[in-house]
Structure formats: structure tokens, C-alpha cells
Length: 328
Image (cartoon, rainbow, N blue to C red; front, side):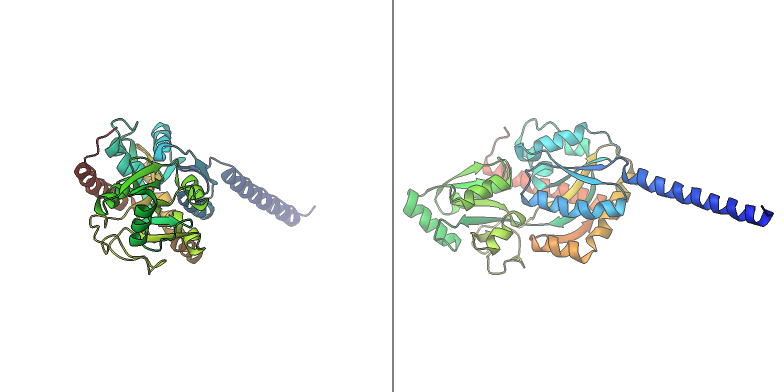
């Protein structure tokens, strides 16, 4: 064989080996350690749907599988405890809203975790509002209609579903009852999905949960959202008034969605995930899906999410204290 041919064959062989190495490295990356995203609520609810939309896109940005694991129960407490117990290597994250991180430590004597010590903020991606909705089994089309219906049906007594005990929705039920001189009792569920099932089956006449939990059934006319929290009406349902418009002030500080990691997770790992999430949130299809769920989409880097969480907890600490609620 001529030297020039041998040289070319050796070069081709090296190229093939290099290509094989790249392919194997890519395969190893794809089969490498997946990122597990804990969700503290059952499949089928708003938080679960949001987590899956983002996981599908994040895997492309990060180059590893991103798997949603539902660890439902106790308003996200079980998932929060699982996060605390996880290794701080960036392979386990917690996607949650305000209740699990900001509210549970205010309403429980021993939630099993301390967000200030056990968690680190990774990135936020949206804010949202909670709302009061009535089931299709009631004729109510407004809060005043609902109040009149409760008085006519139960002599001023009524039950309102909430996704978790000692939650912002439960405090809202109490305030609504006080304002309208109704005996409203909150009925806590293990997440919004089972609550919604009972509302759709007319087993419960009303519920308080997030806009993402209600939006699809509201659009379909199966339930009716009659009031929303926050300082302004929501673009996805502009005809629905705020509680402030109805004379219920104090519910303007709106909750957030974000990712948290175990304390001690390396900053480089956190920053990489935050940057990947920021890129995902620029994708038009992602923004349209999340906006359609009733979210106000916007990337919050770690420091901003941490600041948002602390401010929200301080606001609700005052509301909870004023309500007379005692930590359980």
C-alpha cells in the first residue's frame, strides 16, 4: 500500500474513532443522571401541568432527561421534606409555588424543613393569582350571586374547597365569610385536582385555587371564576373583578412559581439551570402555553426569587397573625 493511501486510511480511522467518541459521549450524557423535579401536588393539577411543560423544554437545554416526580400530600410538605433530604448535587429540584415554601413554615410548628436553612433559590419563572370559583351546580355568576345563593340554600352556611389546609385559599375563605356574614367552612383537599373533580361533579359548590387550576374549566363554562386576587384584573378573564374591587383589600401581593434546590448546591450548578430556564422562557410556544394557564411569565434569577420569597412570607405572616390563626 502506498504511504499516501496509508496516511489517508489512518486519518479516516482517527476521524471515525473521534466521531464514535463524540456519539458515545452524547449517548452517555443522554443516559446520564437525570434531573428530578419534585412536585408536591397530584398529576392533573395546574402545578403538575406547568412542571411538565417546562421539563420537556429544559431537557433540550441541559442535555439530560428532566423527570417530573409527583410527591403529593400535605400541601407540598412531603415534597419539601424530600428536597431537604436530597443530595445537594443539582440532580433534585423542587418546583413549587408560595404555599409549600413561604406559607407552610408560618402555619405549622414543625413542618420538617426550614426554607432559610435547608433550601436555596434556583430560579423563578412566573407569578399568578388565586381566585374564587363556583361550580356549575349553582346559578351564581358573581360573588353577590354566590352570597345570596348560600343564604337561600344553607341559611348562611357553606363549604368552600381549598387545595391544602392552612393555605392562602383557606384564609381567603375566612375573610370572605367575615365580610358577607356567612358561616363558610374551608374543605381542604390533597391538591387542586381532586377539588376540581368534586366541583365538576357538583359535590362542592365553590372553591378557591390558582388561576392555572381553574382556567380550562372556566373557559369551557363548567365552572365560573367570580373574583381574583391581585391588584388588577387578569388578561385571561378580564370580566372578572378583583377582591379589592369588591371591598376586600389585603390580597394584592400575588404568589410566585419557582425552583428550589437543597442547601449547599454549588452555585455553578444553580446558575446553569437558571440560565437554561431563562432561554426556555423566551420560546414563544412556552410563553403562550404558560400565559394561557393564567401565569404572568418572567424569569427571576436566584437572588430575585429568594428576595421575592422572603417578602411574600413577611406579608402573609402579618395576615395570618391578624386572622388569629394558631400554628398547628
